[in-house]
Length: 477
Image 1 (cartoon, helix red, strand yellow):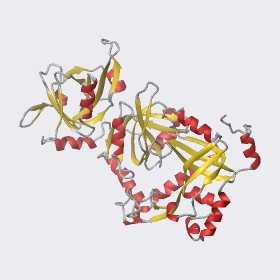
Image 2 (tube, rainbow, N blue to C red):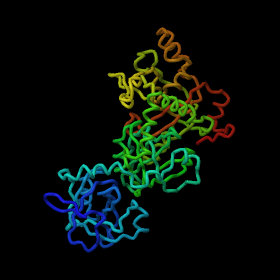
Image 3 (tube, rainbow, N blue to C red):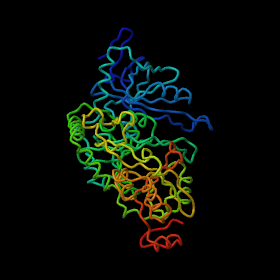
Image 4 (cartoon, one colour):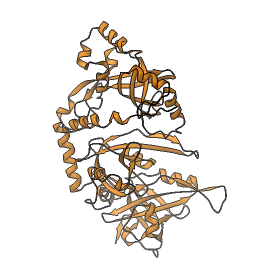
C-alpha cells in the first residue's frame, strides 16, 4: 500500500523494509525527545548530537525515527517541527531494530524496523499541503496502547509502593499545569522541570512531572479542568520526601491529548458534571484541607538556613515544608482593601480575572461558573533573628485563621480597627508553618506560602533559639 499525492508516492509505514530504494514516508509526530550530546569516540574532545521522534500514519502503525549528526544540524532539525506536526521524510535508512535494546529507552512500536536519518542523504519537511493531512491529524487523538489498559489514579495510590519503578499507562484529566522551572546541572547543562496535577473520578490531585522541553511545551497547551490525557509508559515512583506516589514522563512515554475513546468520554462527562454541580469545588476544598497534615511538618529552620538551602540547591530545590519561630514584620492590611482581597472562582477557587470577574478556567462550563467569592490574598514579610523572608503568601483560609476574622467581617471594620488588628499581630513571636518553592519569576526567587501562623509558646520558642530538640522535632543548625 502506498499513499499518493500529486508530486510523489509515500510508502505506508507498515510496508517498509530494508530493501526499498529511496523510500518516502509521511506521518504525524506523536512523540519527540530533546536533543542530547554524547562524546564522539572517533573524534576525542568533540560531541555527536542526537534526538528521536515517533511518527504515525494509521491507527495501527507507527515507527521510531533516530537522527545523529553535528550539533547545528540536529538542533535545526529538531526545532523545525513539534509533536502534532505532519512531516514527510525523504530517503531514510530502514534498519531492523533490536526490540529489547530499542524499547528500553524508546516508545514500543508495532514495527520491526526503525528509521535513521542522514544529514547528507535524508530530508525532513513539515507538511500541510496534502489531502491526507486531515486523516493523519485525527491519529493524534488515538492512544498508542489499548485504551482500556490503564491504571486509575486511585488504583496507583491504593497499590502504593508496590508500583515503585513500574512503567504504566494513565488516563486522567488535567487539574493544573505548573510553571516551568529552569536550572543548571552539576555538569553545567541546562535543565528544566514542570509539574502537572492530574485528577479523575478516584483521586483529585496526582502529580506527573516533565523533565524535557518537548513534554513541557506540550503540557503548556493543556487547559486545566478541560483537557484529558492518555499517557502511555510513564514511570511510577514513590516520592519519599512528599510521602506520595508520582508519575514521570520518560523517553518511552507517548502522551495522547484529548483521546477519542469511550473511556475518555466517561472522564470528559465527569469533568463537565463535576464543574456544573459544584462537586469539583467541594472535593478540591476537602482535599486542600487534608492535603497538608501539619503534624507531619517537624523540621525547624531559621530564615538564614532557608536561604542557604536555596542557594545550595543548584536550582533543583523540591518544595520544603518546615517551621520558623519568628514574627510578621510587614502586614499592610489597613492601607487599601483591594490590595489584600481578591475574588476567586466558586468552582475551582482560582483567582479570577479582575476586569471581567470571570474564571478563565471554568467560564464556558455554565453560567454558574461566573459566581465568585472574596478571599484574602496578603503579602507579608516574615522575620527572625537571622533575617527576613519578603513577600510571603498569607491567603484564603489560613489568612482568616491568622487574622481571626472572615473577609466580610474584615470589610466591616473601621479603619482604626484594621490598624489595631494589624498591630495586634505585628512583631508577636509566632510559630509559622510554611512551604517554600523555587520560583525564578517570583520577585525574591523564593515563593513562600504560610500554612499556619499562631502565637508561639514562649518556652518552646526560646528552646528553639537555643538549638535544643523539642519532642521529636529536628532543628537544622
